[in-house]
Length: 141
Image (cartoon, rainbow, N blue to C red; front, side, top):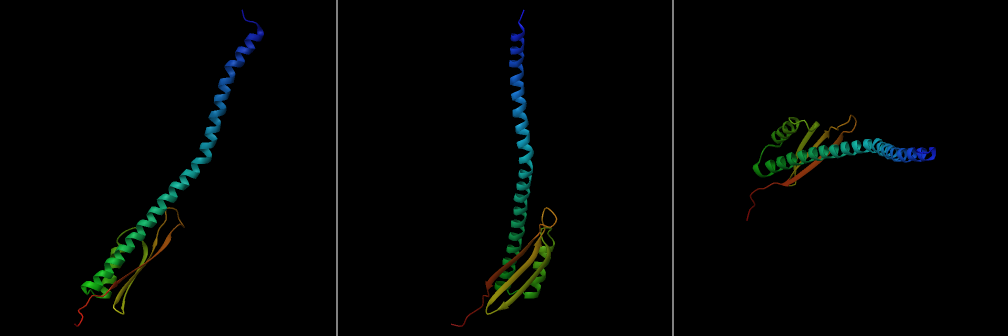
């Protein structure tokens, strides 16, 4: 038979590893509780930045294409403005689209201003894009 000191020592040996495992488990769960919200916020920020970048790129492409159409193909500025506005409004990436096309000093300037909605309410961003192209015409030699 075992003596009482051996029993208490044996129990202490059995309890100590379990207690250490519980301590490590609780510290990792505390770290997870603290880091999980940070990771979620970072993921939302990355997603939001990608949405804003996509909306800005889309507005830039439409503005540049519109400027080139007016400058090189001789498209009427009013028709080009309506076409660009309808192209941007048909997509869900931009809200409150305004397009202006002006010609002066041999240049066509297209300005697109819109609001890119955010993932969370109140995180929308104003997009202001301008594209300029020179008007091509015949020159006297």
